[in-house]
Amino acid sequence: MAKKTHSGNNTSNSAEPRVHQRGREIQAFNTVTHAFHLELEEPVRLEMTEKLNQLLADSMTLRDLYKKAHWQVIGPTFYQLHLLYDKHFGEQVEIVDTIAERIQLLGGLAIAMAHDVAETAQIERPPRGREEVPVVISRLLDAHQVIIRECREVADRADKLGDHGTNDMVVSDVLRTNELQAWFISEHLVETPLVHANVAAMNAAD
Ligand SMILES: [Fe+2]
Image 1 (tube, rainbow, N blue to C red):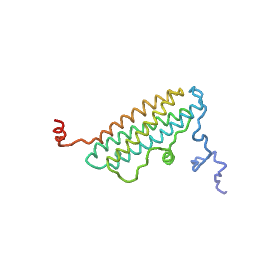
Image 2 (image 1 turned 90 degrees about the vertical axis):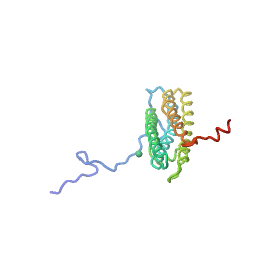
Image 3 (image 1 turned 60 degrees about the vertical axis):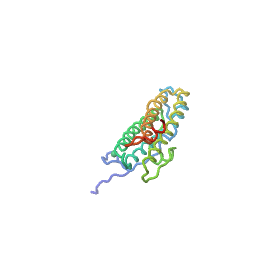
Image 4 (image 1 turned 135 degrees about the vertical axis):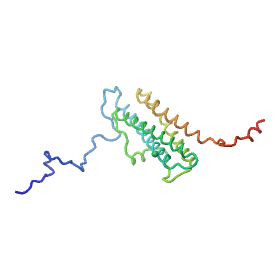
């Protein structure tokens, strides 16, 4: 008797994983579902999710910029910068998850993949190669500036539209953390003597 084989149409008794499946999208990007329980109208949730996706794409870019800096740093400040960059990377990971899940709870879809993020982000793209420490820090500060500006715009708009949850998240979690991180790294760009005090400047002031 011929051995029975499974056909594609009759797999109900099969213990085999059904691999290589594809299907249609069940929700398109830049749309929101009908989440009536939030008491936020659909146009409000649509506008908020679009703005939050921009903030998300830039936060993912800054997150990755910190990891690049963490890996590629060299020089006499290697140790402290290597650790500081990774601390900020970890905080940006949390920020990214917070923004993405806010988009989802508003009924939208969070941008996720690197190629989509690259197309959306406003932050200037760095080269693949290694750059000097002051250049890397300047790039990080510029990236923080983009995000801080976007935070204020989203928070203002959320406040006007009555989306206080988004306003609070953007100000408390994203804006404040970015302000603090920007301060920590900006202090590394101040030129101060490491060994000899600046006696010439002191004498000139007398
Ligand atoms: Fe590491």
